[in-house]
Image (tube, rainbow, N blue to C red; front, side):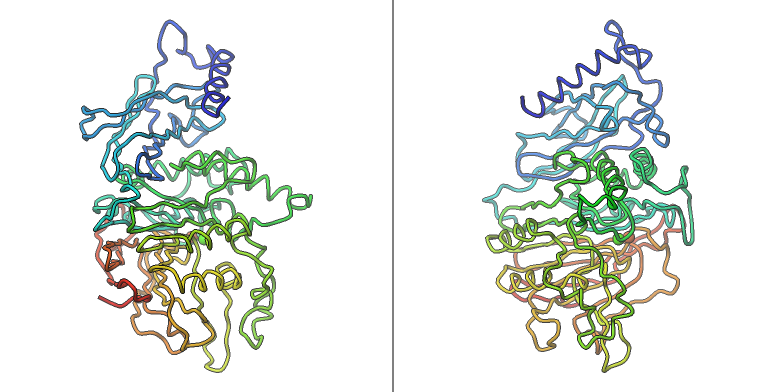
Length: 515
Ligand code: FE
Ligand code: CA
């Protein structure tokens, strides 16, 4: 029995067991919703040349468990070549199951490459909004342009999603979201709106309600409905700064693993991902997407397999190297052996003109010690706490076509030259890092800052800016152009967007220059 047949059989059994559970659900009379079940919008993602994943979740009572009861519900879906949904090319029915919070993930196939499609769902007499999506170009194609944006960190309580409202109006093939889609904690800092349920998220029910709170936002829904998204996660989808690579047999880790299983399950239920559903605290999220021969995106998971965070680093940070000894321990890993092997092998085999490593946390080295003769590399939650894996990737970058790391997490924009040896200023630049600021996390900048001149201690740093927004990229075979888009405010529901800076990476010349 394959997975689909199994799900159908399970759904039928559950439906038989639950007849009558949802008032109007009888065999003679079709089930009708008396409230809109499409309160969380629609989404598409994980684009291939012949298909995409379509997502929605039925939730007539979104902030209190969804309001769906215990029976599966059939959801009809349509894919059309026009936004009026007349020229339908694919359609079907999926069962929204209670053990997946009545979410559905439709893996549509048989579509044409590099083409815009529209999609819509129907269930119980209700109709969803129409979403737009786009397939990737065929493998043998040589696209002359690819337009995408990337973003991260959308703390709901710290700002309105004015960045998403503006992102939805861009002209893009796809959006990459690099983590902190939700924040699991209580509202803190300068709050512009609060959660309906204010507590911390620990259980599956908590995480589901937290995702639902985020996804009721109309601007976030608009950004999902406008483009196919490619997502990965960071820490706050489970818990601040967690490291997943822990001993699963150690009974001390039982609570952390249960929380992680709940967080992973809710993530899967709310994201348009093709990945198989999680098995307890395990979900394989790292994967790649290609746009013909022009670009490949290697999407990493920097949380699930990483060694525990370096402890007591601040007390130890006056070591001669400036690193905590544990940060440079070659046995520690950010990616885990399987993912690291996959990434290095895939990068080495890639024939793409441009190779993007899309991942959550800052990759480049940064020295935060103000004294010229002393060094402090204290990014224990980012790649500076995992030097061996970073160095292996930098070595591979030296022989890869146009490697560019796309990152999030820092809540500010950075552009870095990636040096083969960060300890040697004369070392060649082997790649570029573009780091996207937050959508809303930390709110409007207290003091606006923009920096273009590389500081003496960190000549690899080309740009810093602390506005809220996202990065819009236009890729051609000979050039990557990145526009750092900043919104005027997140303290009000509407805002304008402008470009703070534009950086360009030329084919064959790693490192970004200001346009
Ligand atoms: Fe964040
Ligand atoms: Ca983070």
